[in-house]
Amino acid sequence: MKNYKSPTKEVSARMKRVKSNCTSIEKEMKKLLEELNIRYEEQPKLIGRPDFRIHGKNILIFCDSSFWHGRREKEVSGKAFKRNRKFWMNKLIENKKRDLRNNGMLRNEGWSVHRFWDTDILKNKEKVIKRLRRIVDACSK
Image (cartoon, rainbow, N blue to C red; front, side):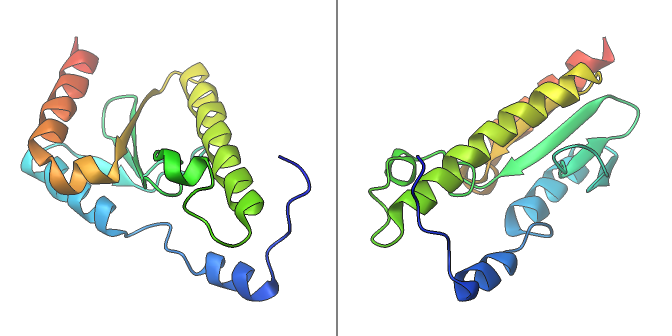
């Protein structure tokens, strides 16, 4: 996916303003962790910048945006973009590769890495709660 046009200074400045913490999905995940009485640390300084580290366990949680982490085919395939399609396709592909690389490095350091999609956190809270319980219970054994 070479030969893509670099973003303009204006686009770069706009991208830098995209929130990377205290997002709506992180706020919702916080509520769910608190509802389950799970103690956590926000934004631990680790590879890949996980959103949460569960206290007393080697559990890391990432709250991933469907757009930025290339969940939907329309973005990854480029169909969602009218301008600078190659740049955006490459950006999302590289984000996915980085996520996999970071997951591997963290697992090699002994962390249990878990990623949750924004749509599940915001619209399917029961599914997320069940998964969180399973994750914490599995690490307690």
